[in-house]
Image (cartoon, rainbow, N blue to C red):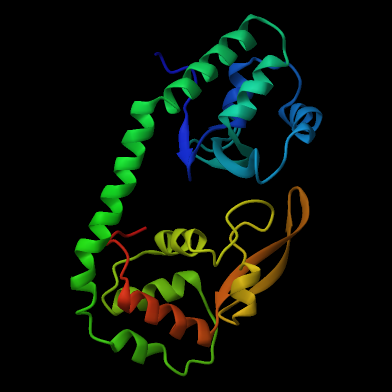
Length: 244
């Protein structure tokens, strides 16, 4: 099956870029207008989440300079429904493509392959457990009694200095996967209610002015108590060695 649009996997779902779909459907109205007219039919955080995309400036700007533009990550099911709205040959072609993609994704063979992949990852974690249990307890000593909150990137550096090979991006992913950071929606990467109630994470709100107006950015912080809490977890369960 020829690729009509790039499809990625996020979590356990197949997703596409809203802008790529918009371009492929050859929509005549502005992207922002198309979003305003159609996205209210779907649920944010379930069917789509906001994202940004890098694109070159026009020819009046220096060569190679790029800008960030609004995009959305949407599920294949949402993309299929959006493709039906133009009611033309292009829309029908995309709809048929998404149906074929869904059928292949849900085929018994693909389901078994994904299940086998998950099983192999769990098995690899078990194989590494004996090695992880041999890590000296210096990581916990390094953060015990700390009263200063640090951001995720700084804590990742502390972990690396103490033998846990993990980068900032992988640590963010780990925190989302284990329910300490919000994984979808407007408060993406903000501490969950659980993390706040445990007093292991807090959030710093910063008001910034952008070309699109005033926005509030939320920075997750790991408290002193949280640093000791997470250090103890990594001592027993050091993550897969991968920078990011």
